[in-house]
Image (cartoon, rainbow, N blue to C red; front, side, top):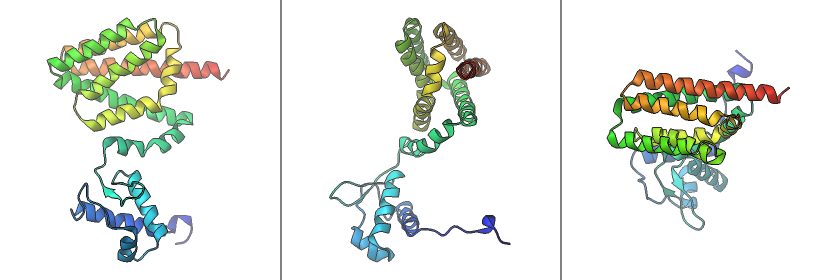
Length: 240
């Protein structure tokens, strides 16, 4: 068989170096905090030139596996959820430059936040409920002040991301906020939207407070569906 679909991509030298160093980290030969061998030692060990070593270290730094400081040898580190999500940022912005990409991210956000609302309704303790109530009260007081409302809107959803105590959820929330910033701002320019959004948040809160996962899911889904509908309505109007 011939043709583009049958071609096998030739691996670049630095990718082999990355793979072998990753194996050493996973096997425990290199622990977080350990310094890697010098560039010259790595060149001899792997039989490659300095450019391949430097490219490998740069790639591993982007992956959150090593830290490279000027004048010092690279040091092994533990990747964080923020590192994981930041790796997606370039691809996310490219997808968001097209309407179909925006719709895909909206679907992903809906699935994520509906899940957070369900989790909160099932597992939130009294202190969690009180923290969410405080965020809701701040959101209510910000109605009529667009900048404050945007900030407290984000804070309400942020508290929901905090409640499961999973740092990956927090990193995903912060990434989604960043990636969908333009959508939020376009929606918040709609007259009266702050009151409508607050009422949606209030319904979500009441379902969570009542320990009603089905109601929390429905309230969050309705809220996000309405947000998407307003956004696409403003986009259609802007395109006329």
